[in-house]
Image (cartoon, rainbow, N blue to C red; front, side, top):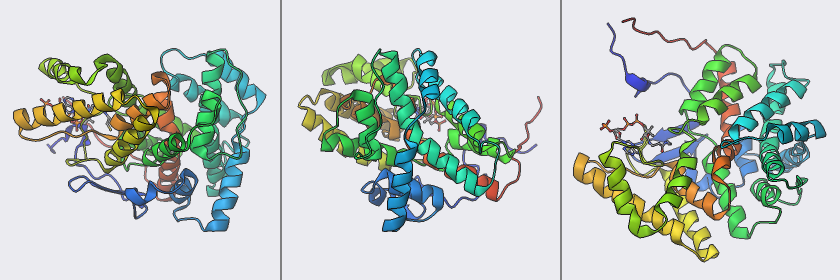
Length: 365
Ligand SMILES: CC(C)(COP(=O)(O)OP(=O)(O)OC[C@H]1O[C@@H](n2cnc3c(N)ncnc32)[C@H](O)[C@@H]1OP(=O)(O)O)[C@@H](O)C(=O)NCCC(=O)NCCS
């Protein structure tokens, strides 16, 4: 019998040109470019890079950004659907419906050519922020706002959600969030998406498979868990007892640990710096201090008890930023999806281009 690797740990399933991770050294690159450099670009440029495989020149970027802006709008029918959906504790349930409806309204839905698929990618990248803002405002009895074409991808989302333009620091924070969340090799949602794409299911169906997988609290859902934890811990002095209580009961602390990184996740480092900046601008640094204390206690406990430290993952300090940006916890996983959708579409195209149906075996017991 072949050895079974539970959770497929360490199994290399395919070749990719989209991203590279060195988990020991804490390196992440999208299409050969270090995450530190990508973090200083715009989400438009990074999503272009992921979807098209190369950095856009000035004209290409201008044309792409203009196209995204025209595609930001959603029609009246979609607004009505968002109003009816009226999600409960998890907005992703409505977002899933919204993407399904977008597919049904898209005349290219069943066209699996690269050109049609790139059109779908643009539509999804552009419309996801609008859908989330509209569903949130409808749920709260507020009038949905039209996108503002003068604002960047991130700033426009915050404007449509909150009804006021973000500060320069807030705009920088959300733009970085989308960039750092955009792509991460064969994480669970991307793998689920690639399985769907390997059956030659259409791109929307594959993206929905990815979106549904993102929802889980051990994956994208952890961001919401961190936000709730920050409120529960409330003050920095409680961090120690909180962690000890959870660990004694073998409960997971959201936003820590990673299958691939055995060192500090490079995205976390950037998020931490950004979180400090938004906290400082806000004036009340409590959430940031709570997070820093949680990080210290987790590091100490894992090092002392297991001989190996644990580090915050991508969901930890991003959740601190969401608190300061007043993004409610029930939107956290959906906001993660705004960034991730460009990576998902890139993987979808890569699977179509060099396809063999993904179908492993199970050992019968
Ligand atoms: C990310 C994650 C799913 C990785 O899973 P994995 O590679 O299967 O690692 P494991 O869950 O097997 O972790 C190894 C050990 O560390 C512990 N551990 C890992 N992350 C932990 C956490 N966040 N809190 C407490 N304990 C943790 C596990 O309980 C396990 O202990 P055991 O050997 O006594 O059973 C896991 O670290 C986790 O659940 N983190 C919290 C959820 C989260 O933040 N998810 C977002 C990922 S980007």
